[in-house]
Every structure is written in C-alpha cells, then in structure tokens.
Length: 372
Image (tube, rainbow, N blue to C red; front, side, top):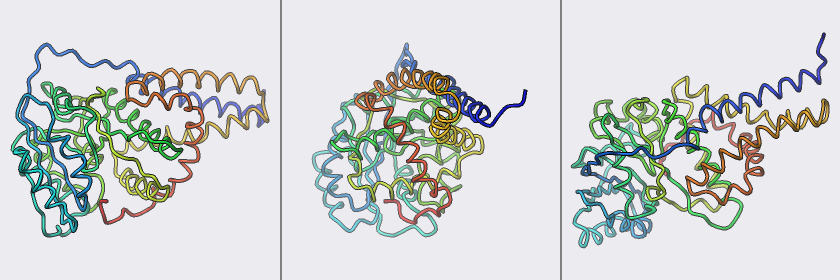
C-alpha cells in the first residue's frame, strides 16, 4: 500500500526518535550507571598543577590560594604562567609566593609568533613542570574541595595517560546561569559517555590532567598552533584512545568558575569554543553532528505528527523518549552536581532547539585570534 505524506512524516519522526534513543542507550547510559573503579593499591604521584593567566590579578588572588592549599600527601607544585599581563598579576604571584613555597611563577614578557592563543604559555608551563603528571586548570577556577589533586591523580592507573574531569559553573540566580550550566552538563554528558564507550574525543582545560611524556611524544600543540583554541579539546581529540583515557566524576574533584552574566559575552565565549570542533576526527564529527541534527529535528517533527498524523501515537513515541531521557538525566545530573536542573529539564531540552539555531553559524566562522 502506498504511504501518504502524513504517514511518511510520522515514519521520519519515529526514525529520528530511534536515533535519539540509540544515543541514550549506547552512550549516555554508561555515565548513568558508572561507578568509580575499585583500586586494590593506590599510588600517589607527584603532580604539577599548571595555571595560565593573562590580566587576571583578581582571579589569581581569589582562587589560587585554594589550589595551593590542597591537602595532598605527596609532592605537588603550582606553576603559574603570567602571559604578558598589564595588570597586577605579577605582584599577586610574588605576594603569594612568600607563604606558599610550592608556587612557581613564570613571567612571559614577549608574545610568541605564529602560535595563537593559550598554547605557548601552556607549553612553557608544561616544559617547566618538575613532575610527570600535569593537572591543568584556569585562573578563574577553584577546586570544589581540598582533595581535588588527590582524586584526579588516583585515576592514573597503569596504562592511563589522560584523565578527564568536570569543569562546572557556580550556581547563581537567573535564567542565563541555568542555561549555561545545562549546556555545560550536556557537553560533559557527551565527552564522559564517549570516553566510557572507548571513543574519547575532548576534555576541558578547566579540569584536565595528562602525562608530560604524552604531550612531548605527540609534539604538543604543533598540529594546531595556528588556532587560538583547542589547547584542551583538540589535543585530547588527537591523542586520546580507548585504552589511555580515564574519567573522574567524584564531586570533590570538580572545579568551579563563575558563569557569564551577560548574553553577549556568553555567546562570544561559546562562539570561540565551537570554532575548533570542525577540526575533530571525522568519526567524532559525524556522531556528534548526528545527535545534534536528530535533536534539532525531533521537536518540529513531533509537533507536525500531532497536527497532521495521529496525536496519541506521536505522544506515545515522544513519551518513551521522554521517560528514558528523564531516567538518564536524573542519574547523571545527580552525579555531576546539577540536580536542581532536573526539574526543568523538559524546558531546557526545548531550549536546545533554539541553541542550535543560535550557534549554527559558528561552524563557518574563522577562529578569533585571542585566547580570552
């Protein structure tokens, strides 16, 4: 029997829903059921924490002491790279160096030619690090607990060279804060789940650790020196494998930074971040793109199926996806400390449709030249 266009429309809606369900049952459920691996023996490695800053004197004064006061039984140092700052960053670091002997400031007074963004100061920091394990964060980030270093280094089991952490945003009143945290949560849901599925594709520089040898063995950021971004996600995308990557989602191992408070600055920040995704491996771009595309089509097809086909059948398909999504979101939001977002997740999920429209043009934009 020949299908009429309303039936075709509903069939496409079912196909799109099936694609969405595949991602939830193959990828995202892995984070929902994830449990921290039990270690029979735990070795505490010396760690070099690296923080790069440009004109961030206030952030250094506010947050760096919490990094320096980590309760880590083994040796750790904090390498603070001051990248050509014009503010009082130098004097803040000199002041902090007096009580904290494990702080090692590095002053950069000249811009690197042909190396865009944060890559040069970060490369210098990694080169100067005394220890094999380097733990990266930003000047505007603070650890969620005094045990941040200990939890992150615990994941370096034999064969592991990269550890992905969660860089969260502090909870504040207002719609924009919730939207930013939801987008950050969704990003983490994907990169943690993909890593658990043996397909790690990115990490965030606010909370990321890897071995110094891995960095130099792969010639650092040389493959994408011309791009201002990518010092975290593009490097991980290139060197991470299913065998050498671990994740840490212990809530004592998060880092927190303040979310943007203005729509324009947030959009500028996200635009800068998304201009690097076009350089991911082809398989990662396909999988990430297919999920976003199916998500974007889901709601228009749902509404069209209700209007033009059969409202109760469309609602049944929608309900199954909604229930599955809710179960996985509840578990993963609880693990990532974003439980308050669960009660409004249906609205936030609809917001993603507008989010895709808002940032679709970033795929065609040239990256900006600055790293802030």
